[in-house]
Length: 444
Ligand code: HEM
Image (cartoon, rainbow, N blue to C red; front, side, top):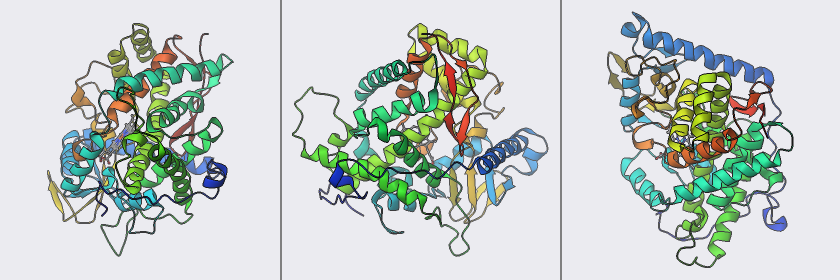
């Protein structure tokens, strides 16, 4: 493994015309929408949600099958079980570590530079987490808030009509603006759609359900048959390589010239290490905040009490209250049902034995509705204690971008809700399970 302090240059042009044209060309082209397959995928998710609810809440199901099976997975549906699994990284291993490393470098299977979320060894994880945390200064958050608010305001100004498509026009656009301004990338407006599609492809590929392997029960996600993730990885890597190259060529900034971009803060690292961090942060940011922002907006539009509370908080300038409203709305419709793990060595969990090699679905989305822990879970109540929320996971892999995510989403919604409550003009449209289209109208 490359030591995190090694400085070496290995930036190749990973995308055909990256060097010659100064841009990443040709653009990544997402496969055509498969409306039928996507519909079935979402129906499947709704079924799993109902199944998890039954085994979490209904007597005698929750006594007889505390960790029920479904489609070859063990489902952890209760709050306490989810916490236990997420704190035992030594037993419940992440299934996407190798694949993430491969895509960070565009390398062959079994090679590549790992990133935090894919590392289970606590010492190695801790070393890399400290390396990144030292660069993600807490002081940056205030600057990110300002950047996000200004970016959202300009995106709203760009919409000439009263009604506009809010997912591409705002929810995904602001994280992409921050990839430029805070991470140090240079994505033009003309490239934004392809960049978002490519990062969403990577996220869907890495964090989806791991297939079962007969040869190696601990094998996680691997290359897909159509190789779509390779194209997506090459495209995102092209922007990342350019940012690292530009950052390393830049003279040191004078003191007080904050905030530096993340790419400039990573200048002391090897290209591979800097790239793994930027790739990981991008895949954690653009797709996840698109999911979160899209679902938050959908919940607010469908729940007048939630919308009223959020608009009041925005107009009172109370960011903490607005943030609480948004993440409570997201609890009602979480970004997903939870992360996947593979059990290493076997584990006795409450009354159930989880075998070596069993694939486990750690359902944070179900845990946030567990009546043992969360009272009146179906009610919108932004005053719940912090322990009611597992949006950002738990334990060693707790989301390192949580502060950034909160800042970006709160400021984006603040800019939107200062216009009053938007009205839905269309229903939420999807690409897979990702929000892709939602037309709304605002007062000008
Ligand atoms: C609302 C938005 C977000 C949500 C709901 C979210 C959720 C999560 C969750 C559930 C995990 C743990 C995954 C697991 O245990 O398998 C995680 C980890 C992570 N997230 Fe986020 N995330 C969000 C935004 C972000 C942003 C904005 C970034 C970066 C800019 C980011 C970067 C990361 C990273 C690097 C990790 C791995 C941390 C580690 O392993 O130490 N996330 N996130």
